[in-house]
Image (cartoon, rainbow, N blue to C red; front, side, top):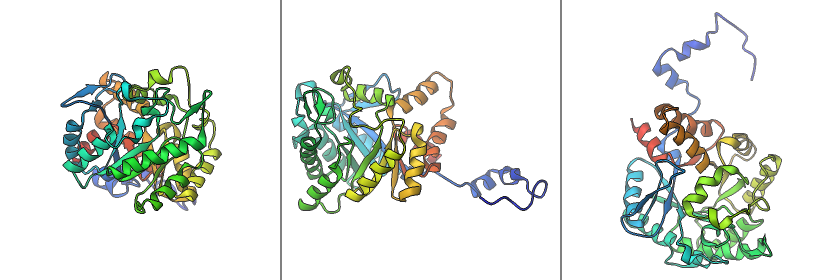
Amino acid sequence: MKTPMTSFPAIRMRRNRKFDWSRRLVAENSITPNDLIWPVFVHEGKNLAVDIPSMPGVQRLSTDLLAKAAKEAYSLGIPVIALFPAVDPSLKSEDGEEAFNSDNIICRSIKAIKDAVPEMGVLCDVALDPFTTHGQDGLVENGYVMNDITIDALIKQTLNQVEAGCDIIAPSDMMDGRIAAIRRALETSGYTDTPIMAYSAKYASGFYGPFREAVGSTGNLGTGDKRTYQMDPANTDEAIREVALDIQEGADMVMVKPGMPYLDICRRVKDEFGVPTFAYQVSGEYAMIAGAIQNGWLDPDKVILEALLCFKRAGCDGILSYFSIEAAKKLQG
């Protein structure tokens, strides 16, 4: 940035801040419902909404209630819903075979949304952790998550979801080479127009705790962790390498996860690649803000949109946020 040739009083920075209209006129960034992806947890049952204690205001929904929620989201201008399943424990297995079932909870949820709101975009996570008894994102041998055989399973999961009507495939597993393999499978199966939003820089973060409660995988993981495949929070250059590889392998969009603690990564990714870049305001981020709102410590009319705007300022094209419905209502006035 060049140093201005003049200074105070010729330059008064407050001039453009004096009126609401002038502040809006010179605003560098803005957020609209078009920037939002709404993550929703789904489970078995009918007319069944279950509160998630660690995520105040968030519920798991049965497919009939999901259809109603999708209509509301669409009416508010939200373009995409992201689906995450709470799988019945009796359906979980070591190999996550339920992920390949064409009548599983995710496939039925996709169909419920498409029947209710055909124009609504549906994004599906590709990873095995909701379906496995061990809670890991891939197939395990001798306590280690195996890369290449996991990719074979992820391809089966991908095709199952796309055949059910999923619009965007979002691999979150962090296996090496999975984007190229999934892209090849989509191409050879005739799904040439299905975009991939890669979880390219997904960190082994402590901010995922409430999510694991929401999908029922906390107990499965036990004392284990995901540090052998998710990224070290200390690293930034490694994130750029991960993003570069995913783009080369066929990703159409990339994601940074978590969001607010990793805004520097968002900025670097957008500056270096210029591709559609997204961030996930994850469950722990949501829980901190929602919990503080619930206790009267923060004003929701101020902090929700401010927290989302920081992602746009950091270069993101969109945000996955559990605040999407509330934010869209606020944006409508």
